[in-house]
Image (tube, rainbow, N blue to C red; front, side):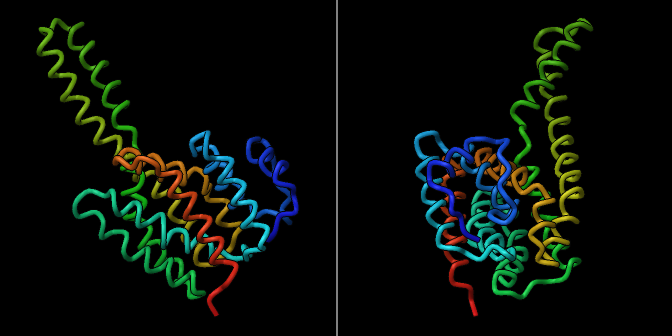
Length: 244
C-alpha cells in the first residue's frame, strides 16, 4: 500500500473524523488506528507524527496481511501492557505475544489457540481500562445520599457510601471486562487465524486502541499514545522488508 496524497491533504484527512479513505489506498483498520492515534497524541506533536507516517506509507509497506498488526502487538502493545500489569498479571501476555511473533513471520495459529490466548489478555485490558475513579465517585455519592435520606449520621453515611462504591466498582469492572472479552475475543481470533484485514477491521481496532490508551493511563503511563504511535511506525517500516 502506498499513498499518493500530498502531505497537506493527508493531514487534512486525518483531522477530519468523517473522512473515508478509498479502499484501494488504505486498509480500513490502518486508517481507523491512524486517525485514533492522531487524535490521542498531544496537539503539538500529532501533525509531526502524521507527516512521518505519510513518509513511511510512501515507501509502500505491505499491508495486504496483518503482519504489521502482529509486529505492533509483539513489540509495542503487549510489552507496554505487561509493564503496567498488577503483580502476577504480566504472565498472561506471554502466550499471546508468542502467537503474534509467530504470525508476524507467517506462521499463524488456529482460531481456538488464538481465542485461548486472547481471553485472559482482554480481561486484563478491559479491567484496567475501566474508569474506576469516576464510577467510584458516582457510586459513593449516590449511596451516601441514600443513607443520609434514611437518617444515617453523616459519618455513617459516608462509610456506607465508600463500602457500596468499593463493592459495586469492582463488580462492574469485572462485568465490563467479561462482556468486552466475550464480544471481541471471537472476532479477533477469527481475524488472526484467517489473516484477513477486512475481518480485523470489523473488530473495531480503534475502540481497542482507546482501551489500551486508557488502561496505560490508569496505570500511570505518562505518554501512552506517543509510544504506541512510534511503535506503529516501526511496525510499518519492518513491513517494507518482510521476513523470508
